[in-house]
Length: 556
Image (tube, rainbow, N blue to C red; front, side):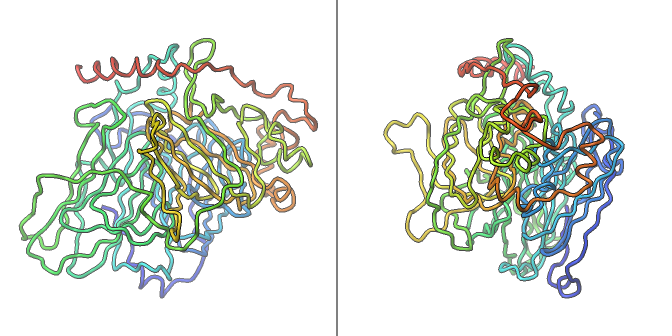
């Protein structure tokens, strides 16, 4: 089990500094120690898993990257705001150009936040094939001091690559299913059944950091006969919230504090449970349970419980620690999280029936170079599904998932308040849940799980100039077009954002333009830009298909 450093002593000895990692991004053929055939993954320095990145608030994170793949790559520091450094957010053709094969690029990221984050590939869903690791940023003035820390980073490892998966999913009619190649669960880079025990000492306080690097399933963490206090969600500190279990969707992070018992007479267990929920049940996969020991004394009796708690994550009763009243929405934007089919009956994931396609010019450069046209969303191409927001505008998003598929929606460069959730077919309003209106500080986070058949309302202040993605964090969905862009403060972008020459060099060697609209023109001429595919919604289709597919998997 990953044991994180003893924080108070180290903080007394170390000042803010450069935290430097030299990463050669390489292919790694491996089965990750699982009973699966090996596949070609994406690792660092010819190894998987990647090293955990640890730093302190105020440090400069320097990632010296060599791309030894035969395809472009990028790195995204998930949850890091990138104030003034939007070009290091790592989304190709959005914040800049990707890193070309055989070339080098350096990310220089000022760490202005503390908390639990992760770094992952954001080109061609390379995180699905292993390019991902936790990023822990400590604060010597943390209001929740702990004596020791433990980290649980959980991921699903599929025996086929992301491209093989997308090829299956894009079969005409949507009849392809990658579930015939089921994954296994890795905990801190090892098979879940090999999960190591953690040691508790009487009277000590432990912080347990949970990072969901999953690509599809939900999972839960519980610790027998100990109360968990949520103190951080997606990098944002919260008022302590006692819970018995923590549920996480892909891309979410939670920290809990646990007070050890005073006696060493008994040992206990912690549990990581992968849920079945919206995925077809596969024995030993969905659901799956992994148990580890909580050891007070090697000779003590192990307490075994019969029932492990399970419950949804109740965001609407958790308050952010720093008081921020509910934002007053100046604009409300409706986002239908659904899917459609092309004229050739190929499935595509969409927001408002728009399936994302990259522009020919990185969107940040379009915002920088199109003068007054930068305030017009069409400048960025209809296929990018762009919303242009004024700086400091308070915006409400209504996420609406009318299908049988959920979506963990992640916003880059910001956090949002979770305000309300309910069922899309609720005609009475009785199933609606909403945060209190008076004196309540709604939870701020960067990834919210929109459950199947439900809606969620979030609000945020667009206070970070730049171009930012908002997308579903299921790798399959993102790979099939489930993405949109927010251009925040286009005039402020033009005045303040200055990408490094190294970024322009990457564009040049790949023949990518850095001027003009989505098609590279300095006008409203979009000739040559990627076409927006015409999509037709067929909402019952996947519901009709999923049942027989699930039964086939279960039977054989």
